Picture 1 (spheres, rainbow, N blue to C red):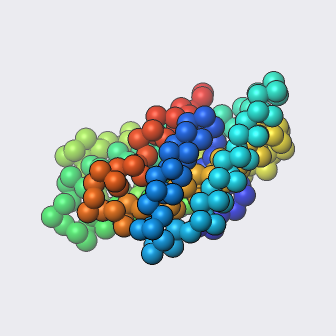
Picture 2 (cartoon, helix red, strand yellow):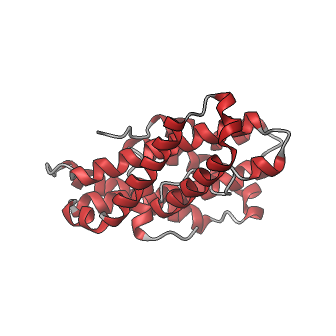
Length: 229
């Protein structure tokens, strides 16, 4: 659960503060009720307190950010769009490979680099490069499920856009209001702390679906910000 500040800013910017606060508040209520069970998985009162502190930081910075009128720089909008489109491209290719190669584990493994959907540009770019290599190797077979050269070209273009965004990240940050950076960092911190508890709870309560469902992400996903172009 170790992230750089820049990675946490990138994670946090995906969520609205209001939805993140509502989701994490419900999670805290459930975790406190289940603390006797979750304690054996490493969920402690101090860990839950850290989540509450992160919630207070998000709420405070949300109020400060409302008082600012400076828009995000165009570089930020371009980077967010590249990330969202790359994640969507990745999901499409992996889903098609899963359907086509489900009985050929050696081939299917090439489309599973082992990285979950990440908003970290270095991680996402590395996975895109791996997937593009797999696509070059298996492209003829994937044509049967609609993977075209145009699709492959879009993947290469997205990788170039991610690399361009990465090279200009410091320039982008210098143009972004500090309160925005601080709020995104706080949201990323809150999300990663709360997600850690979610994952542990879903393992511990896996045989109790109704209780485990309280640690889901449906509410949070409705509050994901769409990329602005």
